[in-house]
Structures are given as structure tokens and as C-alpha cells.
Image (cartoon, rainbow, N blue to C red; front, top):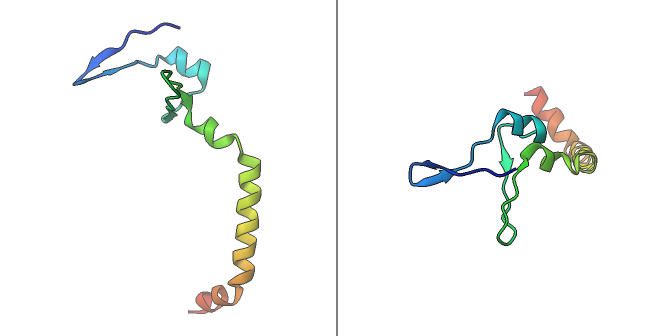
Length: 80
């Protein structure tokens, strides 16, 4: 798809059309890495979801470790 940047103040902007949003899944945030002379726009949620099962497992392990390590402290706080 070829797009022409539009003036936006002292900058230029690319308009992301509804069709582009629907085709790509772009939501309210995007990731915009610039590898070399290319600009790659990807949905931010996809970047976050790429390792979701692994992140969820890491989070669960850290949560369980913290709960076990600070169990007594949490119980004392709950009694206050």
C-alpha cells in the first residue's frame, strides 16, 4: 500500500484508515521500530502478546514465590 504523508504542524503524518486498522489489527497504540531506513508499524498488543504464555508463567512463578516468601507479612498486614 502506498501512502502520502500529510502535514501535521511541523511534522508529517500518515493516516491509518479504518480499512488498514481492520486488516492489521492496529488498536490505539502501535510499535514503531526503525530498522535501518525502514519504518515498521505493528499493533502494540501483538508485540505484547507474542510471548504471553511465557510471560504469564513467569508472572505466576514470581507471584507464587512472593506469596510464599512474604506470607507472614501479608497475614500481619491483613490483621491491621
